[in-house]
Amino acid sequence: MLASRTIFAVSPSTGQLVIVNKLGNGTAGLTQSSIKIEVYDFANSTQPCTTVANLPYNGVTIVRWAATGVHRSTFCTGTGSGTAAIYQVKITPLQNIIGQTAQVVYDATTHTPQAVASPIIFTPPTIVYGNMALVINGTGTPNTTSGQTADQTHWGFTVNPTTPVFDTGNGAVLITGIPGVAGAYGLEAEKLLRSYGIIF
Image 1 (spheres, rainbow, N blue to C red):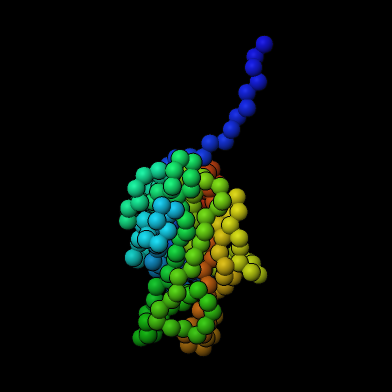
Image 2 (cartoon, one colour):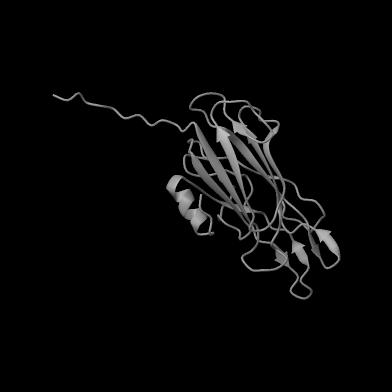
């Protein structure tokens, strides 16, 4: 007689987070914005474990992580076996030159254009996944009313994504948009990235 077996889910000990910059409203032009990325880990939640000063539109960066190890400025770690490594991701939209003025098209809040944006914070799913994807968009999705709380399958954020508003006469930015996000994990992350021509 065979003994019965119970299968326990084991959290991965290493993995990667792929971040794709698609911050634009879906059409070519001035909305396509570069972003600054700062990733923080649980080993040291006050100092970035990855920083990308300027990721252009359509750019991709890969953040490596491990559940155990030493926090570094180029590698993210958790606090022990089975723990999550990624604490949060900060995205800061960078300015574009519109006309002859340097201003941001996206920001953490909607307002008239200014030269510098504030960071938007995204928190990862509450389950540890080996492969995750985070696609930053500017199309006002997902459509929320009070942000989105991180859960087992969704990234969390506190601001509602919106598209920027432009002057129909001269094309100037009237009101900044707020970045949104499409997140995925495991096989869904691979499918999402393939839709952008990215294979990992």
